[in-house]
Length: 219
Ligand code: DX5
Ligand code: ZN
Image (cartoon, rainbow, N blue to C red):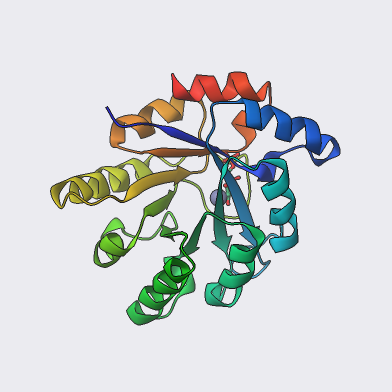
């Protein structure tokens, strides 16, 4: 059996009780912390920069800080997020203009000694990732259009997960599959069955008792 990891998305965290929410995250069985970076251009919303990540690094020292860049020119911000404490940086296939550019950004992230991955939006085919799987520690399949939490899970993402699971297993690659968007206790079951390793969940985890919600996703 694959080990399933949960990555609560801090997009849905209640910042008026930041310390309490971080204490609950630390006590939960979630090992990843998903940090959505939006630039108001690649996606129609704005979120956080590296300084906020530094706060999470201090507040959740043992969690794997999983930085999801939904921005244009991801290469420009790799270094600042590394310095702020990222353990893993993923960026969008659609934000890049060439094969070479993607390879160079993956190399750049790895050169800092952290993990790297590529993300695809719902309308992008899974096959575009094939050329990069051996260079990725993780690939992220969006199961909603990136930009906002609380959207409905798109079942079409499950076929992509299956295609990639098959490919990764066939080549015996150490690349993990993460899914992001609309994950709750029901869609988590579908995603795990399709072959996902890491489940990102924002609204579902933060709508109730964090530890309990994480446990539900692990069931
Ligand atoms: C959306 C973000 C997600 C978001 C998921 O663009 O990438 O990480 O927080 O939120 P839920 O789990 O509420 O769909
Ligand atoms: Zn995300």
